[in-house]
Length: 303
Ligand code: GRG
Image 1 (cartoon, protein in one colour):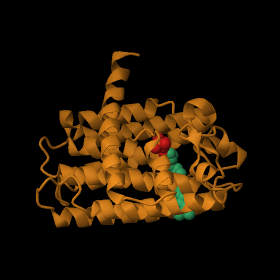
Image 2: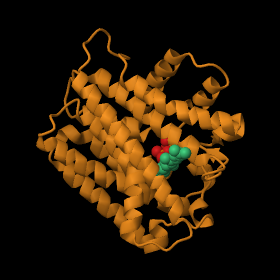
Image 3: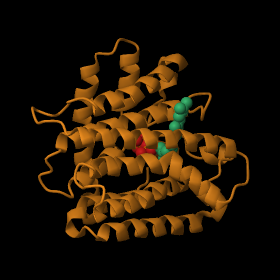
């Protein structure tokens, strides 16, 4: 592994350790009954790159000694819970009907369809319970304005994700143009990634700050780039490395960037979007080191 690769890995590894701890604390606080407790544990705790929490922490790092770290940690947990819900529902037989996720049998394969459906449902409401709680506060007063903005950002992005999924399902087997595909991806995948960044940004900056505009642009570019890369990996990576079924998009005739533009053009487009993301980060200089590293990881990722 080269020196540069290990730097990328470091920022993700430390985020993975932090979120693993915080998710454990959050899930324990719920005291769920069986079998939903085990289904939720299965959906949340077993692997995943934890890119969205990593983006929350890296955005918070734009301000050293951020006094609102409890709100950042709650945001990271909440956004990952919503992401896990979307994966559980996305894998259900009525959706993508997938048997493998994060290298494990999917939630409905292990616990049955109705428990998996309910696990997805409860993950969503748990996210808002966490966001509106005092988890991680350690006696520091809650900033209710930040809390409100975070709830709003998560709810809006979560609705966009569902609308993106609806449009994506409707487009299966259809020929669509690039702007229609972009609209699907910006909603289905980009919105939650952008929310991860903005839910943390509101703990650091005021709405009128130029920093907010720059981060919004960064989030938009990186959110779309993530899905373009996901489309590319679906055809270039194998199931074992991906931890989910490779080649699924082609199988169900999904509209993807490689299908629309060809593989080489899709790779160029991913690079262009990453360049746009890095341009938006330039405003922050050295303070954006962690965000820069995550951006590099996302372009070079193999899973
Ligand atoms: C509301 C019934 C109902 C269903 C919702 C919203 C939804 C189903 C599905 C859309 C979410 C989805 C699966 C989008 C694709 C985004 C994507 C690339 C997911 C994989 O994200 P990674 O690579 O996964 O971050 P890990 O496993 O690393 O966390």
